[in-house]
Amino acid sequence: MAFKILVLNLGGTSSKFSIYEDERHIVTKSISHCAEDMAAHPLSKDQVAYRKEIVLGFLRENHYQVDDFDTFVLRAPPFPAPRGGTYLVEGRCRELVLSYYHPDEKPIHGNRFVLPLIDELRGARNVPVYLVDPDMVDEFSEVAHVSGLPGYARKPSIHYLNQKAIARKYAQDVGRAYSELRLIICHLGGGISIGAHEYGVAIDSNEGSEGWGPFSTDRAGTVATSIMLELCFDKGLTRQEVHGLLRGKAGLKGHLGTDDLREVERRIAEGEQKAKLVFNALAYQIAKEIGSCYAALRGKVDAIIFTGGMSNSKKLIGAIESYVSGFAPFVLYPGEKEQEALALGAYRVLTGAEEPIRL
Image (tube, rainbow, N blue to C red; front, side, top):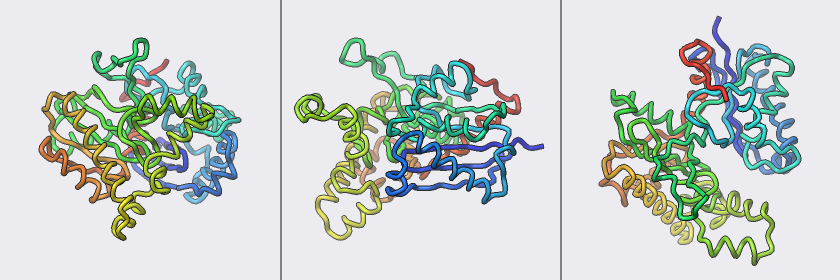
């Protein structure tokens, strides 16, 4: 009998569900939730109920029931994980994941409430739950941890799951081991993370979730100290309002009123100069971050790899390439491999090929 695996990858305004039987992909469904539906379910507990019904509908469409599955796999919230691998969500690991769930608050991201959703689905069944390669696995070099503010270390926050999956995919395609390569991997999605991978280890990156680096579709990226002080102390904004501004109302959305890069490109084609300027600034900031990783790898790079939804834009990749084309060959893997990486991480544990990590 094949192991049946249900993968739940929840974003802030999106859901992606996949069914695998052993290593075989059966079906995936991606949903972008409209603003009206999100507004009708504003709190985390509302999202649990809302997305539970969507999951059940997905299973019915494909002639599955919840009880058919041997395991559930989730995309984890950004808890500090000691190393990459597949984690069994029980004990301390479960406590850490649930610490991000605040039922009566607006969720920052879907990965904050995915475990309560799984609990609703599995009920009293003792079915294992796994997470794979959390985003805040810390492989930084010692020197990369040092910030300019004593007591506050630089910490990684990259699309670790997808970056690792893409790195392994590239290594397989070129017939080499990931542990032999020096790569710069650029995940260009709702968040942007650009990582320096040296011999199988992500030694440095920007902070793709909350901090420094390029602005993205709706995130501010690096913001000067003086601006932060003004927002926090002179504008009369609450902590939540400042956070919502920097992550949700900034980037392309803040400048142009849209987080859709295709819409921005259409407006450029129609001659809108502001759209052109902001688009060029996005490419410029991404290129500068690539340059930072190039320095971290001492100028020895086998490939610069692009993944994530915005990597589908030939115009954006071309604009970035105009700055850094001399560094290393460009390789494109548009979209992402997260669903496959989640499913196969669980499968390796279910078959005994790999031991689960327990906290």
